[in-house]
Every structure is written in C-alpha cells, then in structure tokens.
Image: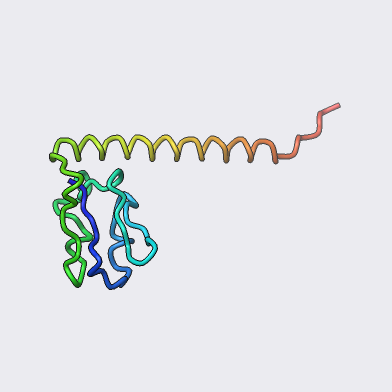
Length: 109
C-alpha cells in the first residue's frame, strides 16, 4: 500500500526529508506522495517515517494503491537497484570527465 497526503496537510515540510525513497514532493498546493516510489518505508524502517513525524496525522493508506508487504519489498528492491545503477553511471561519467581533463604527461625523449 502506498500512502497519500490529504488536504489537511499544513505544508510544515517535516515529512519530505524523512522519506528514504524521495517519494514525497511539493504538489500544487500541498505535499504529495508518488505511489510508484512509496514503500511505506519497507526495507528502511519498521514504520513509515512520514506518518510518525506528521503533526496533523494527514497521511493515511492510499486506497487506490493497495499493496502487500511482499509487493512493497519488491518495490524497495527495484528502487534500490535503480538508484545503484544511477550512482554507478554517475561515477563512470565523472571518471571519464576526469580522465578527459587530465593533462597528458610530456613524453620522455
């Protein structure tokens, strides 16, 4: 099950940095949760951190995105694999840029 933020949200900004999957973002009027990224903190914590920290209790389960704990775990694994691939690509790109910028040593004659 993914979570959702209701219109009772007061935009206090405490939930967004707590999300380990970067699923929480500022919508047009209130914060929103991307259901494709929300794992209810499965794989990171025992309980959803946004729910724990929300001062107005406006983060219920999203009825449109009912998921089992197993499905949430699979989503966590997929998101982690995607993150690892992005980080690896960034490291490779940085290494290539560093290699291209390195001066060529003078040849010994």
